[in-house]
Image (tube, rainbow, N blue to C red; front, side):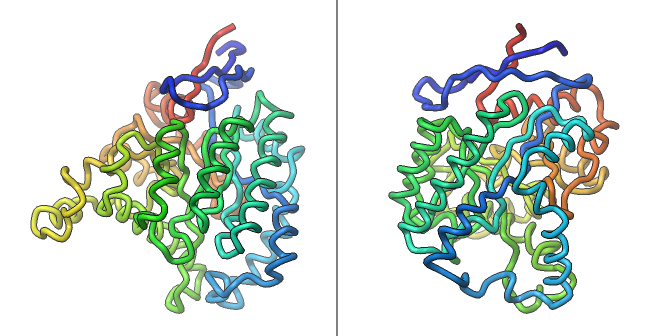
Length: 358
């Protein structure tokens, strides 16, 4: 593919900035990685000044061995997580043309006071926007909003999209224990639908003593948290109320895409499972996008078979150890047309971008 530019498409009412971004496909297909993290140290500093220690959560309920491995990992990848130089070199090495950068889940800061959470989100969004502006041919951005204060979150979402040019936001699977179907959060989803931007759902582990060993808070907890979040979006009526909402779920969507039949059966068998929805749960499930970070090609094949290739997006979880070390190679066995969609073109559609040849 020759040099190209990205231009926006989508609803006329969308406030997504329509700025062409030059991009070059370095291989046969354009490769866009939707699941990459960039940290903002200044946001950590803002929150620590008011909250020196975060409340007990996932990391307080993990084993000493897990915490030590996590500490060593952060020493190893800290420069990649916060920096750009090594990131760009890694992208060249891996064959990734464009990264969609978003904050690491440790920077949600929902536990912070509302004003501090807003200040941290603004710092994150400005840092991501500045980084994208410095490398428009290699990066696109998803920001953050303080979901503990939905009115502030809506205002910051509009600023991040309208003023900073971000393509959407990343959110957690719950807000301080509140599920995503909580009525207080509806204005955020309404604004995202109105703006035509993406909500990328990424979990922050599962806090329970039974998940303390073997990194189960992440290994088993992350897909479980995603399944719970998606379940609440479906059964709680969020996707019914906002049918145009663009949602992408990390880690292959969690467990639900592999066990969706039980949801439809429940909706047929029990009135309490269909009080907020008019269609079978899988009707809403198939409106979602998922990344392909499932670590096994047979599971990727099953995801394609059950969900289809049109709403799957390459994701690597760069630069963490639970990510995919060879994201392009992981998809190399797919048929050419399917591969082109999953490794790049689906992400372009989801973000409201299109390739315009020069």
